[in-house]
Amino acid sequence: MSAFLEVHQLDVAVDTTPILSNLSLGFVEGEVTALLGHNGSGKSTLLKVLARQLQPTRGHVTLQGRGFADTDTRAFARVVGYLPQHPPATDGLTVTELVALGRYPWHGALGRYCQQDHELVAQAITDTGLWAFRHRSVDTLSGGERQRAWLAMLLAQQTQCLLLDEPISALDVGHQVATLRLIHQLAQKRALTVILVLHDVDLAARFCDRLVALRRDASGGQVIADGSPARIMNADTLERIYRVPMGILERAPGLWVSYVH
Image (cartoon, rainbow, N blue to C red; front, side, top):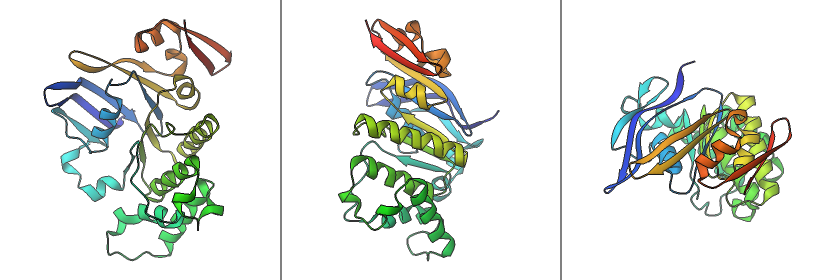
């Protein structure tokens, strides 16, 4: 299967500090992939490169086989949606108004919305379980509800790929599980390619199809583990990723609990 998004011999440095080094990695269509690793391993940096928020020092990135340089900004936004760890302020926007911003790549600042646009916005709000809140100000929502509103905006954008940087970092455990379950369901329903940065390896193994772990040394971050949860969730692999002695229990098929010795 050909890669939907792919990085080739990627280097990223900030000033003279290497963040990613000689990284080659592909992401296939319709798969939910978690980026794992210790703080500073390069997870968010890789996501920013994939989102065209950061220019690599060396190497190149392809989207559906085409180089980033061959895809203009609006065309890129119609395919790839990016949600940073700290989304911008919503400035009193209602849920519907925020979600409707997802139609911008299709119309520009002065374009008129047609009936289909309104239907896509309504469908995105419905798919994320926010219909009852559609007239509420986003600022008044709970953390989990706000996160769903941003996801709805990306769905209204009709992207084929979601890049999510720590989408559950500010949520309690219940909302973390609900958000990841929603992301997985949406990926299946809409055949989305999803790449997200996570710190909780147990939740990543539960809700993602693939786990990619980065580890950074003096030369920069590199992939040290890549595979299905069943392949990654063992003590030896987790110890290599996190550099501490780890143990693991499989409480039920596909449900792992890891712990530090």
